Image (cartoon, rainbow, N blue to C red; front, side):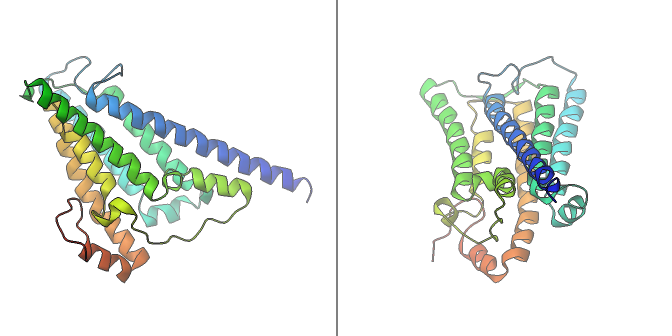
Length: 252
């Protein structure tokens, strides 16, 4: 019994280290994503790098985005989680998902093929600056929305910390703090703003924005199905009261 207890503590500490590595990998990835989309402060952005023939660039970029979409969607489904946690400890399930998603995105950034042909370019400096600021507002909405719910649970750190300290994870509760009273998916809204608000829009950037936006809408369908299964009529009433992405409905 005595020898088992240090072993158990070591396993919990290893799980915590794994979760911390996954979280900081995510943090690096999301910060790099800001620079990648905005072409700011990163070695390789969405419109930089070695050029390829158009059809090769389209094929590679679509394959990279499809890989991320499949990984991101499949690993988030309840059935996959139930199967996956037969082989990995449940406390690191979320961290594993976050790590795989981050690595898939880093692969996309690394292998992305620029298509720099300009679709639109805003000449007027003040207007260009306003649009660039709007893109950063989108990123602020993304980060703010994660903290309004539970940022550290969303990215797996809460689970491994609770496991390390021997605390039970609280049961999921349905909450609609601040921005969630205006739209059901402010995180996705923030991404859409960040991707589309570009003073200079290239064909490659347009492809990235269009495909990720389409994926967001598909992802919402799966996510809302899971939320209805989890919260039932409480979520159905919320869905009837609050719009999905754009705050056009009046609150009741």
